[in-house]
Image 1 (tube, rainbow, N blue to C red):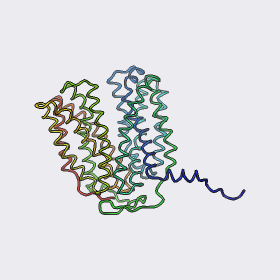
Image 2: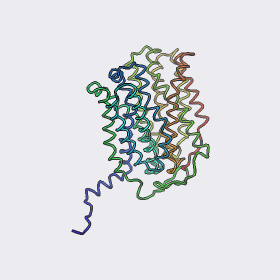
Image 3: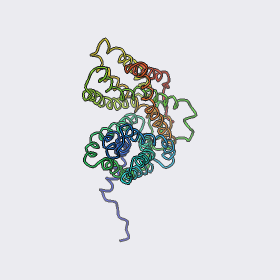
Image 4: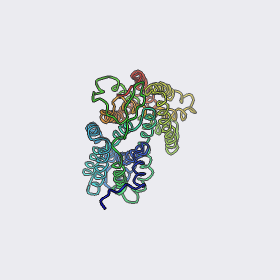
Length: 411
């Protein structure tokens, strides 16, 4: 009666299972998909939002943008929380708050209250992405980290894709609020999975990172990485390369319809077709960077090739119309490939003591780039015409080539 019970084999297996770094990566991706579907799933149900709350198309668009604005307001503060409280606690808290915010939609009587809820949703839902990036730094050695970060980066298109697949039908059946209950439920399902994760690896492993060695699972010295220019340069590169990426995602369909005479469904299929090689390229480049130890040299090469492709897309289709679609596909794919490498570089420069804050800054600056790019390109279209958005994007990519730092070492 008084003897302690030995854990069963099943319990031991479960404990070993949740300590596997690839399982932890999978759990963090489930949490990311839940967060992404909550924040970025709203645009795919805009017609029902407009109908249910009696707002115009423009007003519905403003409502859909409020979660991203809420994210900008709090993301830097969440980075501090991640570094102080850890990834597991922060992710679990954010998921619970995300589900709670979505639950408040049932109590929202009109557009103004919906606006407040959606702003709150973005404010509480932001840290999951940054926290999952810090998990990659903690649990994966340098020889696997690029691949792991590339896999982790696929959670964003996966979450958006699943939202586009499921939420419109749910909105037709249950209304806007009913459809947004699904991301709330997924967030709650993810919470026990996140809490089941251990806080850190049992044993540190040493692995080369850019010629140095990094203790996996051990905190790095608390010296701020922002005292040096290297991490700032990576942030700036990400912002510059975010301009062509957002430009292609925003205007590719419109370009094919308006300039090349395609139907909207066919143009949309071209953009959709680019997502698979776009995601696969992140994984391949991550694996290649793991073997070479170089994070930013491939980014520089990508930027150079992207400059050439964007300039060709601006001018080649006029004399050679057949080149438009191959060039649109090439530019879409090329502009997607840098994300995993830049996020990995930021995490490694920062080290575990600063990774949460550094990745939050990375996400925040990319969100700024995402927000301002359509405004800039709207001016370009007004002054020079739609094809010129690509050559302006090429200028930003060329600026990124000049800013890319040399060999990255871990913080």
